[in-house]
Amino acid sequence: MQLGMIGLGRMGGNMVKRLIQGGHEVVAYDRSPDAVKELTQPRVEGAASIPDLVNALHAPRVIWMMVPAGDATEQTLETLLSLLSPGDIIIDGGNSNFRDSMRRAKLCQVQQVEFIDSGTSGGIWGLANGYCLMVGGSNEAVKHCESIFKTLAPPDGYLHTGPAGSGHFVKMVHNGIEYGLLQAYGEGFEILKESQFSLDLPAIAELWNHGSVVRSWLLELLEQAYHQNPDLHNIRGYVEDSGEGRWTVQEAIAENVPAPVITASLFARFSSRQDESYSAKVIAALRNAFGGHAIKPE
Image (tube, rainbow, N blue to C red; front, side, top):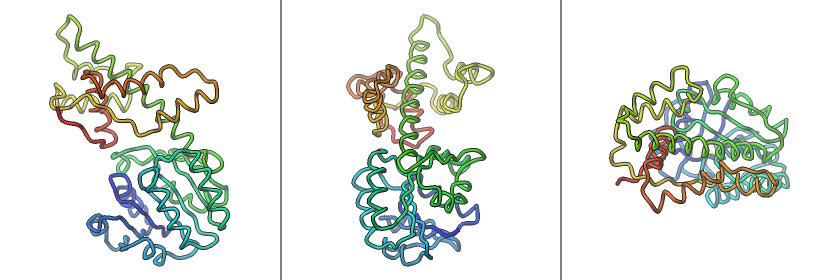
């Protein structure tokens, strides 16, 4: 299948590579000409601009936006809507707020353009392992793009969650849960570190990945991080939040759902920006391991 990809960062670039491995043809655009040049090959046609990308696609056009949530997504969508035709499809694979996605779907509907929101999880490991995709949109649009989703996802790693907005809603809650998991690992390993015993934290992380009820891919990544940097040296305990945790807490309040763990983990990230803590160093190391998120040096 032919599709356009706008945004060739650490996620978008790897998604292009996985798509061409699956036999798709991609027209790729990024604000950085070097990023486009790096990916250009027989199955990847580089575009110098969004209009060039649109013109290179066959109707009905399918265009995947993999750009930062907020203004970048809004401006890209506005540009696309000025260029697309009825029946074309826009997929937003970024971490947009689900309410924005619902609004954008209505804007597209006015022009008879389909809008799909694809919550995307997998980070920098998605190229090798596949991306978990939570997809919202009309049955017709999702079915048309299904070969794309099945190529990007591992077996059973793609789900049509419902109408437009539902994909990003599910991804929002997914990330809220992620906040709680990361916080629990961070706090647990700080308790181990500060105990009266001289404990081998890398060995414990490795141990818990064999038969323990707390074993997980995150713990495997922590084990790897410890083997590379046993003391987490030169990692500042400063943890960013990309918005989904805040949105999850806001929705919990709106729905009268108690969510003390996710809420506390969000506020712990705020605390990490004021006082140095070992648990924050663990979380910073984990976020770098699974998502390639930048580490602030000490």
